Image (cartoon, rainbow, N blue to C red; front, side, top):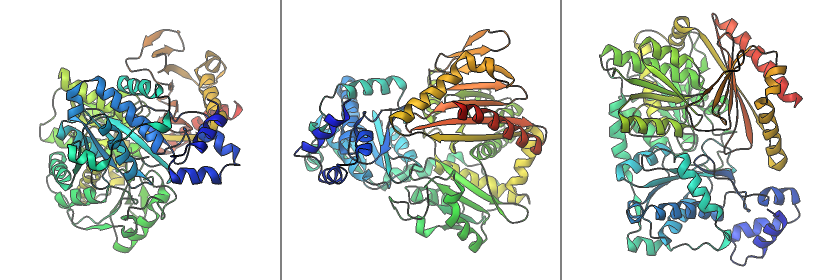
Length: 573
């Protein structure tokens, strides 16, 4: 794409959105920004778009949103009139232009005779997934950039099962989008016309009340300390109502909401990043926690699909848990509870991603429960649940990923921070009832199953040159030259692009029974491993690490050594 020609086309377009027109005029001499804004089309990743807000084909704006909506509209139309009538559920979070983008989607869909159900206020991603299933809709869309900084927004597309769309559907939508020749002249319908024609319906609190009732089914039940003191922050996002209602439903009334962060603020003005994976996001919750002597701090990201937490140690200091540790605690509590009640189905299965801790597999094995790995991305967990429903081969129990995403009840088909918040409160309360801290419970799991330790390194490389460097790094690690030159004790190399697993010692190859993906995993001696994966929605490349030791000190040392060995290779490329 010739970015100069495209930029000039936008500049001369008389009906260009006024805000974008002013931005273009202001930045007319900024060639670096103009090139990055127009050198390519914003890519439709594993389930949608995500990018910085602004003018251009490589930014989130009403035109790129309309383009994605038109691609979806053409896909739905190809599936017949019934698909069009079943329609699309649309939700949005608190980000800049989220509500506008949600309405733009309905206007594109409505122009093509497709029914839309649009929430009348910001709502979490899990509720979108739930509503698609409840309404029997053909598809769903949520306008969000999840935990990204305030200058980002995005659009995720969901299938009729309430899970993120399959790769086949994503490829079809991408094909339709690529056939759109003029980004600026797509036709849209009028909101009032759609309402009168019955093609637009606004959803109110009734749907969220249905969802809240379903939370009863995921509870552990039994005796626990309902006076547990909880501080909760929605980080200026959409989780506030559902999380607080869910906690109250389960008997937790001693809940303090971080008032400043309960406000829907698209600038996320009280946090550097609205990401519960980052300890800085808890700065205000920590202040509240000290003030009310809270046992548990919880935070959810803007669209409330990720949940992070902190608890007190024996000295009363707050300690933050990783996504892998939270997942292990949730999983152990669920399996222990079901086992004690003799409610574990014979064909139970736990789902985790290829870069999630092996501690979960060890815990599940204790209860004779199978663990299956899927590709990174919760869409693959949702797909597996659907497979199990169709062939009745397994009973889904729990799904999680290291990046703070968890799913307990399958009435939702994406990660659900509301479910996770309710269940972790019960877990913490149960330990307190027994006179223990959660950290003591986690220590017991390590002593029983081994001291697992994980780490993540992420490198951001923006622009055309950055994308080229990411590709260069991945290609080097994928080459046979890397393994031959490496001093690391390789046992197995898993290439998810070629879907081949190679034994380093013998060269024997075996197929990987997963969809293709641009990712690599290297399994080493001593139960260590590392994986490499470029992000599908951000200009990042991520390096994941996992080790196991007989003591905490040993596992920490092994993790430091492994990180150092791998990242020194990256620096040399």
